[in-house]
Image 1: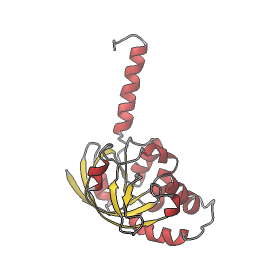
Image 2: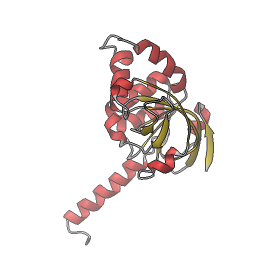
Image 3: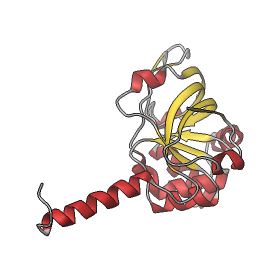
Length: 210
C-alpha cells in the first residue's frame, strides 16, 4: 500500500495507476450533491450570487481543495449538540450522482483526488487526465472501519444543507482507498462495464450459455 500525504503533487498523481492501493493522510473535505451544485452555480458558472457566508466558506475550503481531495460521504456524526464532532460512520456515497459537476469542480480547484464508490463517467475521467487527478474507490459497507481513519473532525461548513450534505473538514490518517480511475485515461469501472455489456450481448445472441 502506497502512503500519500495530502496535498498531492502532479508528479505523484501521474505515477499512480489503476489498481494501486493507497493510504491517505492529511486534510480532506466531504462534499455531496448540495456542495457540488453550490460550488458550480456560485463560483464556477456564477449563475448564482454569493449569499450569507458563501465567500467566507469558499476562502476556507479553497486552500484545502487545491492539490487536495474531496470525499463523497454523508457521515453519521455524534456531538452535534456540543460541537465535539466525531464521525461514527463515514462510508462512501455513490459517486455517479456528482458526474454533472465533478469535472468542473476538479478543474476549478486543481483537485488531485475524488473519493467515493462506484466510479464516475467520461467527463470526470477526462478531467483526471487533464488536471491531473485520480478517482479513489473507498470500500462500501465499511463505514465504521473508515470512520476510524478520521483522526479529528476540525469543523463544518454549510450545515444548513443538512448533516449528510454539509462540508466536513477532516484530518485523516492512513485512509484506505484504491485507484480505479487514473490520469492516463484508464477506468476500471469502464472496463468492467464494457466486459459486462459484451457478455450480455453474447448471452442474448445465444453464443454462450449462462
